[in-house]
Amino acid sequence: MSQKKLKTIIVMPAYNAEKTLEQTVKAIPAGIADEIILVDDCSKDKTVTIAQKLGLKTIVHAKNTGYGGNQKTCYNEALKAGADIVVMIHPDYQYDPKVIPHMIAFIENDICDFVLGNRIRTRKEAISSGMPIYKYFANRGLTIFENLILGQNLGEWHSGLRAYSRKVLETIPWDKNSDDFVFDQEMLIQAAYFGFRIGDVPVPSKYFAEASSINFARSTKYGIETLITILKLFLHKIGIKKCKIFLNQN
Image (cartoon, rainbow, N blue to C red; front, side, top):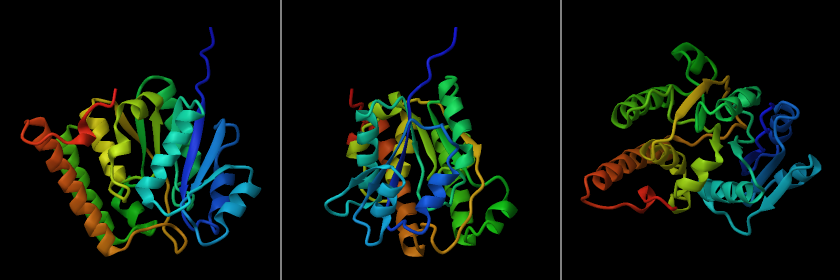
């Protein structure tokens, strides 16, 4: 008996992505997604025009909500559209979309609930792809620490290519998360706390002028907020201070 195909929706949180959006969409394997939804966070370029030309379902924010705020709209729209699996990819062509079918397969076959694209297979490969050296070592340090504290074994904790089962998005209170870049870390730490099966697949990546990347100051803020989120989890678990992002929304 053939297994019913799960409905897959790809979401793209977009901001000023006119130079890379079409390239990203065309690199997505044909037929892998039932729908692609782009949420534009008040871009100042032609991102919306290009998205509509490509036939993407396009949601335009009335005001800028931030990276995390954009993702909240992405996931709300995907769930409303009946997605069983939601894939989030940045429209900046940093992550190679050809790995998306493999990510989806881990969820379809009930192996994982949440799958990440892992950019760091080796130090040489990561740095030669253009990842700044300070970001590489910060990524390694935080990833080792988070794996140790949260009992995981992920290749990296800071990927912007992700696939979620519907159950993950219906369980985790991501609507209470930050609207800033730390949203990604909160989602991942929440998934670990709620006991979801998290895995990763290697993904080729590249850094170039048009690819989205936060500067040193924002990276430092992101790193500090990641550590604060782990502290919040610790205090929540031992009962000293309950935290709303770790309270089951069901």
